[in-house]
Length: 162
Image (cartoon, rainbow, N blue to C red; front, side, top):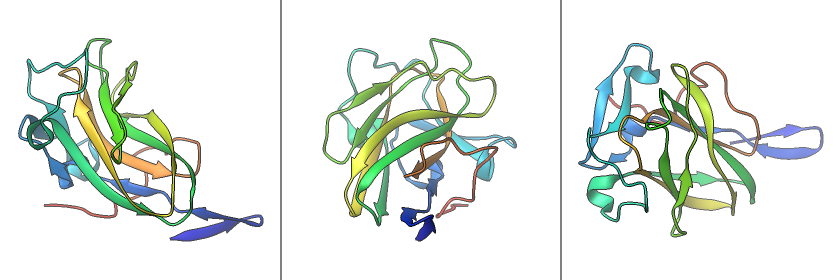
């Protein structure tokens, strides 16, 4: 969906609940009344991959397919609860590009943090999130051509799961 600001056509933010995406078997879906849709994802305790992204897409990644209507730069934010410097990072991949480390995402409770910015062309894309440090928690993802983070829980996600 699009909207106009001044004379510029913009894309509405797309929001996702990671627990409703393709969730790898090494991730946990955890209930939390303070999380959007009442759930969030985190990796199994004891799993860390700090030197490089884990390679097993079936077990180690959360995969989110989406589409955009405009070709331009998009900001990606995650609503995270990452309490310490040893529990505050993920590996991020857009489409078939290389993984980049999103580190230093510490929060006090659930907060939106930037997990990357990408130039995307009009059409379908795939965001893959791999674990890096156990204890990092991801509640919601926002992809928008607007450079500022959402507030609160953000707008409802496009797809909700039970």
